[in-house]
Length: 420
Ligand code: EPZ
Image (cartoon, rainbow, N blue to C red; front, side, top):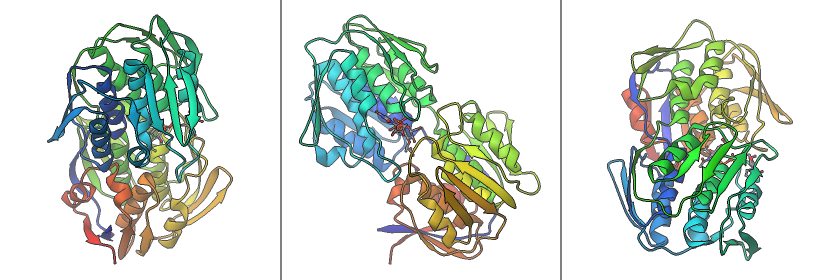
């Protein structure tokens, strides 16, 4: 197993190119199952998660090529069954259910099960499929959704923590080939949902309202092949912005989209990290001392839960009390005890973490527990004095393309090593 060995204390300098979005690419790759014609998806990040999705598409019978960021899929003839061994590797694979149900009127998928950040049920996905007329059966760890006919329907898809991103994506895809009009109320407004709707419309779907809480889909008889370029990864962008602030560096972000990051840029600004547009780039630098800030994670366009851990590393360096409240996932504070190993002073109280910031961090061996927690540990290691070893970086490789190379180009002393 691999780890990152980081020698901290170097301010990041230079430019970083942002990759395509993992969370947009995954449902867009699944959407290629909706047609028997070839599709071409560009700017797909080379990650273990996108490689898993390729395996899943191939296991369903599609011909797939993935080279230099371009994925070509031809799902001429497919089957409606995805087995546990593949699905368990990646929760995001649940988004093949909608396309299979739409195209084959039948989908049998292993239930994804929980994950370290929360229970993550799929009840809202199934509620949406049932509203379209599918019969749902859960047996032996599998969910079966089947329908002779799918009919458009109006449904409310809001849950305990508000809208569901992949639930909205799944139901939107299922409704593209249903008879009649579907209206999804309390739909997720994330840029990844908008990007998926854009691709589906390029395939001949009729979707309006993506990006707002009300999405309308008018069903069509058939979808065709299409080409699409995936949006930039806003969470990777946020991660590099935070790293620049935490190391007191100055970096230029290339190929990112500031409009997708207003809540993050607003909180960075409040914390003493400025983000300025310069042509197509964003220039990120500290402006004086870091300041404590309160953050609550919310559905888009609120502060993203996927940037919560990274911000905690930054606020551990800001003298004063910051309160971070996690409203989306029940247990997304796995990084707290590992940050404490680097000297951070953080207490958890219910859904909030009380960060008593300002204590200098010092390097130590730490353990990654999930994708964004591992990014937070890398940022803390870059800001800490001495050497930090971040173990189990396979978590990080799920969502960050060549992170160590990109950081080295910014002057960081970080290397991939075999875990002892
Ligand atoms: C997507 O997950 C992202 N994953 C997550 O990113 C991200 O954290 C999340 O959206 C929220 O922004 C991908 O796009 C692949 P949700 P998703 O359904 O769609 C509850 C990362 O780090 N819920 O919007 O699975 C759920 O338990 C990953 O890249 C139900 O109760 O998240 C959670 O509390 C991690 N019932 C909340 O809604 C349901 O049927 C939001 O989950 C579905 C969800």
